[in-house]
Amino acid sequence: MPSDTLTIPMNLGGTDSTFVLGPTAGLELPVHVPAPPPLWLVDRTVADLHAPWLDEIRACCPGADASDRTLVIEGGEGAKSPGQLVEIWDWLAGHALTREGTLVGVGGGTVLDLAGFAAATWRRGVHYVAIPTTLLAMVDAAIGGKTAINTAGLKNPVGSFHPARAILADAGFLTTLPRRWWRDGMAELIKTAIIGEPHLYADLWSHRGELADLLASGPDHEPVPHILGRLPWRDWIGRAARVKADIVNQDFLEGDLRRALNLGHTLGHVLEAWSATGDRPLGHGEAVSIGMAVVFRISAERGRCPLPVALQVIELLETCGLPVRCAAPSLDELERLLAGDKKTTVDTLRWVLPERVGAVDVNATVAAGELLKWLD
Ligand SMILES: NC(=O)c1ccc[n+]([C@@H]2O[C@H](COP(=O)([O-])OP(=O)(O)OC[C@H]3O[C@@H](n4cnc5c(N)ncnc54)[C@H](O)[C@@H]3O)[C@@H](O)[C@H]2O)c1
Ligand SMILES: [Zn+2]
Image (cartoon, rainbow, N blue to C red):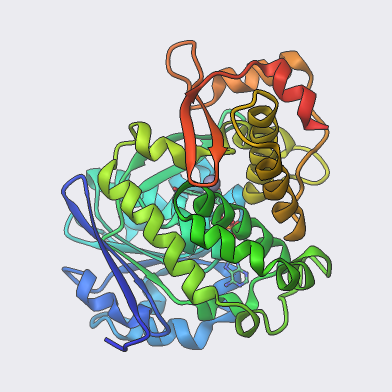
């Protein structure tokens, strides 16, 4: 394996799951496919923009012609739907995928959440490998075995824990990633640094000038020129991945430790689902950014987190071009959406409130009215 490759082994509920980060990570695939050839579920944009490299990765697994064994789907939140899942089940049936078979997902967090859930449910669970192609998926979504789809106007209410045998991450995919999705990934990167890597957080803060230059403005839908060369992404992705891997390795089924990763998410998921039918749906990272800004403000007001820390985090999010407030639902609507949040235990929602960089309280309570105060 090349020396510029980072490997992080995990064992998630008895299943080995290996995170590999490096320019040839995809070529490790055969090691993680017990009975080749696998089936492929690929994000359409990635299939179009990275065809030669994908062909090379697919060719390294022996067996039938991979193009006959690939389903290309439209990435984005709409992919995580029951209808899309049924289509995939039909396609898996058409290819007679057995329990020993492997499904490889290639794309951002949406395609991977869907592919992981399809793998979890098909024949009660087939092998799964994830090839993340967005920053958000590399630092967060692909790691840790949570899979889900959206339904009933809710985010992720149907899902399962089904770890990928391997997560093969190559920052090279990010050369084509539009600015809007870099920003979304930054929200999860900043979240992860706040929870478990104060040095990474300090590093991000010290590079805020470059981050602002690259991300704060500029066309949303175009790639960011030269971004990979301007900042130490491979180091940052590796450090964030290690934090998440350490947490899920210790607490796969989400007790208190893993719940820290929900910082900004209880409100974030509600805003994401609520905005989905509007003119400009919030991306997952944008919604999490607003969710984090609100809980930092609440913590600061309660005297649980120093105000300068809260203000600095909010400034860092804004520096990356992320929103920190938005139009708010009515109080009734907010309460209804919160009650539907999948993390509700009986009647009590437990919130993750930050105390400082490197420490969060995972058992806090927050009233809906308190959220509205800071939302817009
Ligand atoms: N399972 C988990 O633990 C977990 C954790 C965090 C987030 N998530 C989920 O992840 C999802 C968000 O993921 P995302 O931000 O990656 O969004 P995404 O999958 O929608 O990808 C963003 C956009 O980028 C495109 N794209 C993907 N790779 C590209 C590339 N290399 N070049 C150009 N375009 C590319 C996609 O087609 C899509 O349009 C949410 O649904 C969220 O709930 C899951
Ligand atoms: Zn998230």
